Image (tube, rainbow, N blue to C red; front, side, top):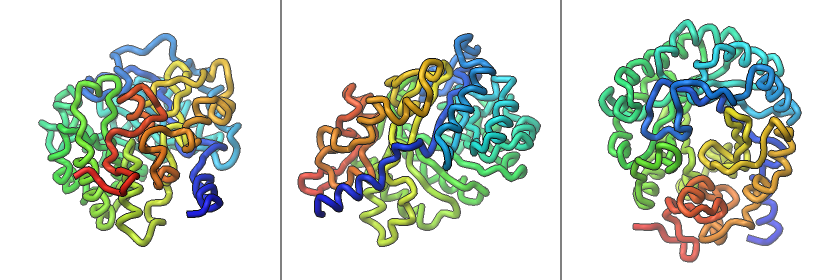
Length: 358
């Protein structure tokens, strides 16, 4: 590939104007005790979280990105722990910000609560399902009954016409159960199944990650399922899935929507206290929306600028011919070595000879 073509390919996958997805951790309060919780969630709300007026200010800052606006995902903790959630959703939608919710499957997640949010303009919901049975899922979530509430909420969401995404953890504990989870989801009217490859942050550090060869095999399995599933199949914190997709298909457009998107490049995260990070799984702070506009931090902070520049990557990610569309998980690199520009230790690809870990 010529230098000109390489630069063109790189620029096509740089999201320096605005994130595609903006995650806002509206609170860290949650009634679950998930073993892989990124946030180390607690039962009660933090008095330091952004209050209602500050929340309104953040929504106004989001509109400063201009068109097209990022897709806002309100997450936590459990967003339903905030009584002003409906008003926040209503204002976001009034400002033209497409808004989805990632709640916890607790007793707060009722059909009535979802109906109220749908009337406020909520467009989508994402729920986590980490086991094909109540025993497996509830063991990870730390609360009995979570599996049943998740399926009940899924039915309520689809009845309301909300777009539904199911998130599933990929770890040593869940890997053998993935085919059964897929079989459970296949007949459900969901739009997207996103498999999150474990990052060892927060409580997730106590779980066991899969090995690079298992990750490679899982990506090939996901590719096969993506070709037959009635919903979109995606991978989170596993950008090397895009390499597998390119190697396996003559129709890269089927998977190209996410090409290049990774922590800090097309993704941004705002914490409950207003800290701005490249993602919720990469706990390095660029600044705070209480002091610096979100647009300025995303576009100009050295942290985000470095993460968008694949020429600054180190290790085998620096040499990889797929770095423009992949770039490795910056969060996993940081969790592994403390270097967010280092190599992704879960990727099996060896760029020097194009081989895979066997």
